[in-house]
Image (cartoon, rainbow, N blue to C red):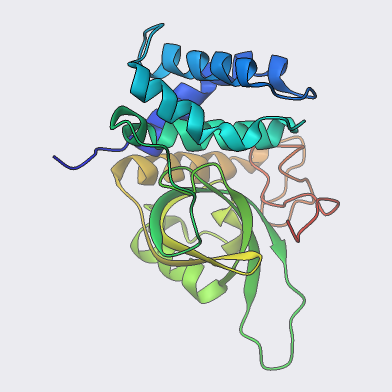
Length: 246
């Protein structure tokens, strides 16, 4: 029987519980005992149990073994735990989770923010898009991708669930979709963007909130508002001070 992997929404649900207990692992050198406790935490949330079969527990621990002896920032710990949660069927099959090598996979994705690319001679309009991968082997990865405006517009018109709103290109920020993903160099490559019913519903709800300009303290459309995603949950722009090469 093929392994059934959790949806991005299930991963989010589990991670919302796990995130409350990660502070003990931040800013310290991670020992094997600490990683065992971290696996136990994940088991308590994903399995609703305090115990896991010995071989399964070993597979989970092996999947985090590369963290041992390292002092990792919270963002990296979250990324690695997300990878573990999203790929839990490997653990249940008593296998360590393989590392993603950048080859083509399908993943659920959320857009964290956008940044403009200065136009070049003859270049088609395109944007830097900050993406977080929710499912599959690359789950937990946050990286930049470059998307043409025409690609984003096609997604709006065909898949997003927001065609009737005539969204500005920048309003891709915050939306969810599924796509085929690969990595070449520092950027993710995205193609075949689609959205299921739940993602479409969420995208519509986000768009409708952005239409309520008169209820905002800065009553201008979100796509021209200068606020960043750190300043407003409806904002579209990724903070300029953030390193775009990561």
